[in-house]
Amino acid sequence: MASSKKSSASLEHQLVEKILNGEYPVDSYLPGERNLAEALGATRPTLREALQRLASEGWVEIQHGKATRVKNYFLEGNLSALGTLARHRQHLPKDFIMNLLEVRETIAPVYAKLAVQNLNIDLISYLLYASNIPDEADEFVNTDWELHNLLSRQSGNPIYTMILNGFEEIYLTLGSRYFLFEEGRSASRKFYLELLYAADNQNPEIAEIVTKNAMTESIELWQTLIGRTMIDGK
Image (cartoon, rainbow, N blue to C red):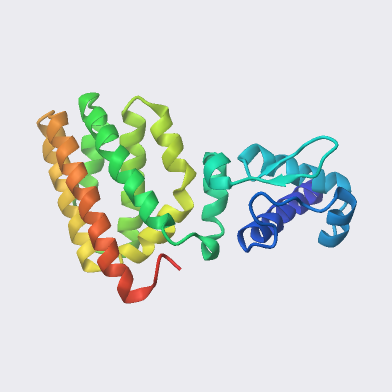
């Protein structure tokens, strides 16, 4: 059973790779089950399992009696597809990272405001910790992720946490590059201190403003810093 699941996961990875590299482009049709299984070196039951998983994420459309269609995963995919896409970073579309940052810029001020509005002592404790972490990239990567996750959970709306969880892997990967730069670490430490002030004063409006400003600044910094090491996260 374990090997079947592992094989299914491997097939999913192969198929997504082929979709992303254009071998099976959007709106094309996959080869018949028998031919596809032979081409991938898989059994048909294991292939069906992989295709069902991909269908549930919005990568393909299984049509009984018809060929399986490759869907437009950006328009027809879901949060699970986002997580899968994050594991294939070499194929990320040009604007993907900026799109993710813009989504965070939109939702982070809202869940930060709600978290301070629903203030819990855990948030103040974590912000105190975050404001005093060592000036090291790894510390900032994990702390920043945990802070946003905590804010989303304490907002009272679990959808925010689900959205964040959808791109946890790529968030941590990008963060490990962003926080290599002192500018990124300084900007985030300033954000943690300002958010701590808002929480201490139980002021959701200030929390919203400082979070919005911090997320906007992070986009501007990313655009500046990215040119030093890579292009569009690749």
